[in-house]
Length: 413
Image (cartoon, rainbow, N blue to C red):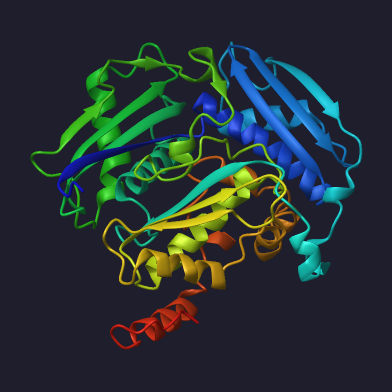
């Protein structure tokens, strides 16, 4: 396994067309679940110049105004261009209300173990969770820095410190690794959009972004730009307006940004726009929860958890753990720990994280917040799958395993 390398990860701001679609799709999910937690909904969105298209299938008693939701998201993101703004853009919908489904009408908090076992996944999916000790969030450093720069860009724009900034920006951060640990900041690339065709000039834009976006993120950090760090701000020149008036967007096209910045594997399935009974969404959260607790317990420096689900099965048909040579006990034993101390059944995941009631608890604004800056590794949100409440259990179990005599076949508790 290669130990010395450069790895880069990208993030985008809330104004990127793909992320605009993710936010609209998850705002629709929030609205359904806020009114009726047992709702089933799949919502997908596409945007282009002057047009928003929403396709949704749902089973619910909720009343949802799809165009109004989309316009509110567009307004909050900040688009007010002549050819794309919340007041004049055309919103087309293709909606299909499906018959009531007894399968989804259960209350997960009142289920017996036998009843949980009978609630099977309705999709085949292989999902991944990852954690590493590169950051306090237990996430890969390149992605964390890219997200922080994207947030700082948005904050700078919203505070009108640089009033010419438009909502869309893309950020890429490269980190040089030595022995698989971050060593130095290799590069930063920022492409920022402008809402003014006459000012500022490119030189001022670059200096403004360096001062208002990059500098605050790295203040006080031990790892920051050095004399060899490659810095590129709008390397292809001015980027006017950005957003749907320049390029189209679609729900679910930014899986790497949503998860681990391509540093670890992720499922090909979209996360946004799906209710919590979709295993290809909530399984990702469960896998992250497991991987994060293993790393937080000190049982590995890096850990990937793979869960494979099959239709008509409640439990995953396969649980795999990969520690990239950093595990403190064998990977097979770590997988056994997960099987014994985590419940990866669909209804159990929904119950443990209370996934169908979180929108109501957050006044209709929960899943939409996940649609930008990552579904995992968030320190700004109180996400149940980011808790490390299994650490003591895992440490105790691993200690008993290591305490077995050499050559014995002592089993995990």
